[in-house]
Image (cartoon, rainbow, N blue to C red; front, top):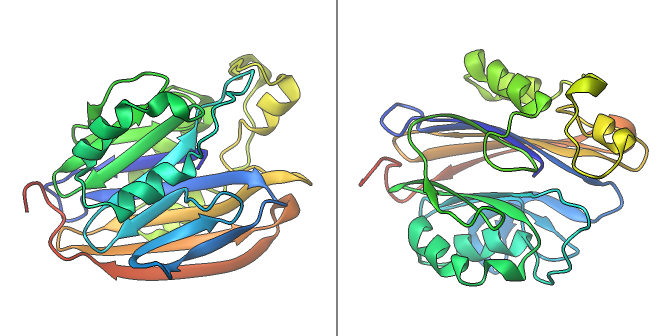
Length: 255
């Protein structure tokens, strides 16, 4: 993923409400969210180049999403960031235990931001910060820097969460292709042209752009729903998918 905004209120009827865009080169092969053959309890998209995922759920009540940490020059670490989410969803570890285990080897991956959740809590960890954060109830945003770094598109997307209480509205907030004013662009070392292109929530060009808009709602009773809209070059709409998944137990603290 390259943009994630979410409301987390574990004691409410909807503990997690999330909207996320996956930006990638259109030529990179991937699959929509589906039940994985080797792990049918897992619902996630799949990167066919490296085998991992950017966002997924499991019937045990686990949730995972990852974004890249933008840096120049790019890290030469060899392990795939998408494997972090897949490994967690396949494991029997709690989110907190998985992150403590990961922290010992985090430098083997390029820069990443990892968001993990289970019935015990929601956690954030970046190997460019090296601190496990247990998130308090509230609204958060994540792009290609640390949690809640106030890039213009992140600030705008978080504000639009106010009235986005269903999948239709969550999907709509992800489609804003307004680019930031040049004076507001971050300087991450990729050049002004790329900074400008990547400054909108929804990105479209000939070769690179938003491939998937995902909306996720997790209910307190353990019912989760994931909706995806897929796009091709220049933002052309492709297929959309909708999945419902029932967790084995309610999704509440200590449930």
